Image 1 (tube, rainbow, N blue to C red):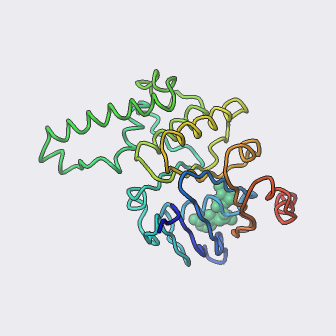
Image 2 (image 1 turned 45 degrees about the vertical axis):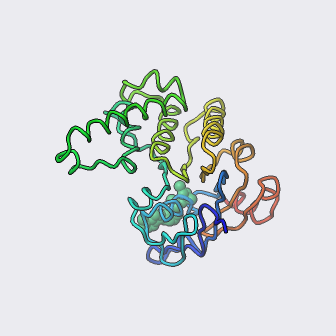
Image 3 (image 1 turned 60 degrees about the vertical axis):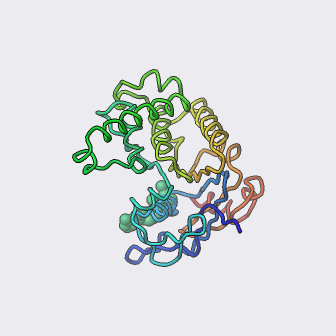
Length: 257
Ligand code: ADP
Ligand code: MG
């Protein structure tokens, strides 16, 4: 029997008196793009923090390909194949583009600090191989970023920073990539480039899925297979955007802003 890639059931978290995420059910299938939309403060980023293990849920469960990952710490969830970006950029500005991608690989490279001390030659060989893979990955997503691989990430314009974060997430060879408002700070042309990146990455990696928090309705109308709407921590709709956008509850959530 084949399981959904990611299955979240009744997920909830309470901060003091505030239930920031309430009884959310969400399924992500293989090779699927799902967008999460909803007003500011609805609980979208908190849902990502739960799925990536940054917060422990007060209630509910999470399964990755049928395996229970509820309560796992963030590093273990990342190693299991869930990668993410943050709403505010978290690149290392003083490192090159290539080194930023290399850091994304660390959840999957076998050598740790002890290996580097005990088996320096092997560790160095693995690092060099990883640098080659990082360069190839950068080139596959964006030849323009690859051409600038030795410059510092701090010098990149906003849209390229967002693209680099996606390459870094990809470097861990994840099964799920979660993007938190990837188009923020982008104009329409950059957003089209972002959608093209996601489609290209999906085409090259069968089975990989994206969960994307988004507010740009052009992207939401064009990119995902399905849209889930969150309002006051609850999921109020899930389905085709063409249908979801007409639902009275969804329209109220947006008009209420
Ligand atoms: P969104 O991403 O949909 O704009 P968030 O998930 O960032 O919304 O926030 C949802 C609610 O949870 C907000 O009211 C926010 O203030 C609250 N919240 C988020 N994280 C914490 C936290 N660590 N402690 C207390 N409240 C929090
Ligand atoms: Mg947010």
